[in-house]
Image (tube, rainbow, N blue to C red; front, side):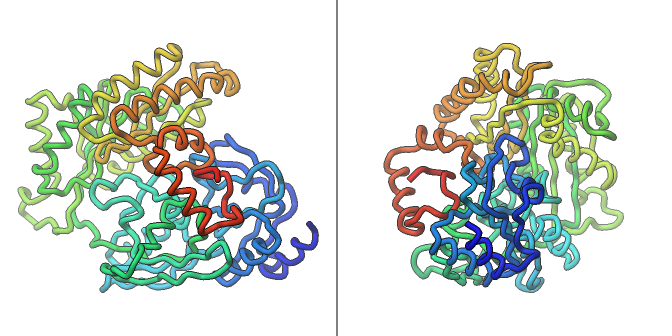
Length: 476
């Protein structure tokens, strides 16, 4: 294998190649530390041309490639297997913003640009890139697109798939498909862009993208709301669409168990309300219409206050606090965004990134919590997520004092109970985290044969040697 190492070094140079065990280690395990793989090398190309050359070499040598972005995934999609014969191809050196077109509302970027950097660059031009998630300070846009990431603004702006106009992709043969078109309409045959979005690097490597931008909101209202039940949360959201004049940008649901973990593990966290409640909603409204000076009635905060007052009288709201400034709004959001980190610090947990239709959330929540408890009465359910689009992170924390090995003996039974229930409600076993290697068997079990056969046909046609992220999404 030393010969291929030398050839890789010739392509990407000394800075672009990591072969020592200590240097490779951060690329070989996932954020949750559920998987630990091995790799021949970590290859860090600095350009599309270098990516293409690396892929051509690996195709000739029959070496499998595991593309990797910020390595923040939840499903093990960017982690190599344990054979030591694959390479990890990290795109983190390809981190340039190539063009911002504020008139055309687009931005062209390389795949390794950190999501938060894109958000900040858009803001500097009074524009918004609406993809927003907890890992935005370290995840990269290539990883976001390859998993069709969702985040907290999906109900207003859509998934990552809806935020992209064009792509540049290196195919499994090492050829470069230049689809970097900033076109809103392009009906010229099959939509190759959508084929690569959400494919988790199994069909090719996204190297550049043309992203959509939006006007930056000029008036925002953020509220932390205690509700009596998930039913009340869904009803509150339903009425908010009209009350806000269709300006609901986020609606997140959390349980008290999750809030307690954040308050326990994240320094500086503060409970916004004086009394404890079982369920909370974090709701945000945003408008591009500037608030007019001296016209309080036109502001979203006043409209939100009026709406929540009516909901309080109707029994949909128990208590609420509306952020009085940006710092308070960020503090509300920190309670939501630190759920995953606090669960990690608390101990072992099982993640379920699922979706059902919004109207089915209350029934699913009730039945799902009961299903978890039937399997393991001592477990601690920590449900939270995007009630606005039906995506719930229906997580299960291990009982206090249990180590990971002991708790994970119950993982198959707990997940099976949850996924069976999801499917019975017409939902999906993966809403925004992807399949990776975590849910390969589940996908094979819950998807129809015609869907699986079609996926395999596409995979074999585009990657006949099965060298692009093998073992992820589907077995061929």
